[in-house]
Image (cartoon, rainbow, N blue to C red; front, top):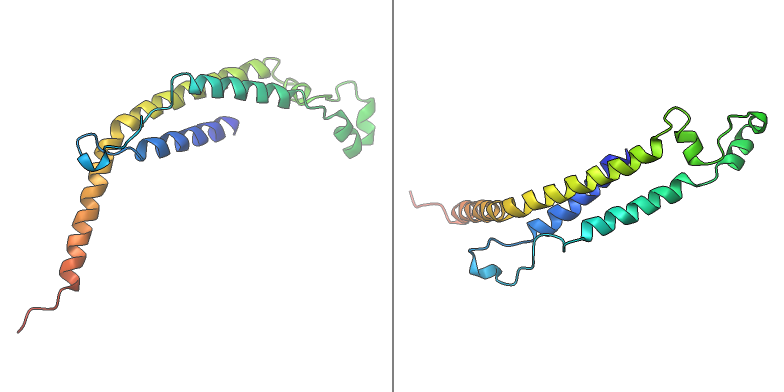
Amino acid sequence: MLRKLILTAGLAAAATAASAQPPRDDPRYDRAGPPLPPPGELARARDSLDRVLDALMDVRIGPVVDALDPGARYDPYRPETVEDLTTRNDPYARQRLHAEVGRTAAGIGAAAREVAILAPALRRSIDDARRRMADAMRSYDAPPPPR
């Protein structure tokens, strides 16, 4: 779930930035900025997300477990933190989550580069479809030919 959320957010941000870029050969769009995030931006986001992940893994849930099930406080396997809960069946859960964040960041970077490459062609295609629809509507709005 975390992976899908991160990937979706990153792709949405990358797609928004890239789709806002005009075709390079169209003079109407001379004021365009760079379609890709600045170098190091994804690395900074990845590092921030790693720190957020560490903070979430260290959240103490022992008192919550006690409140929900008072008998659990005598259970030697009662989780104290989110990490205790996640590593119960997977001792490497934290490392796997951090690796997943790294892979997702790399995937977002690759997707952003692909979207930036495809954005001008997509923009031209959308502009062409818009022109053709406008032409079709103009002919529909025109008075009917005399009989």
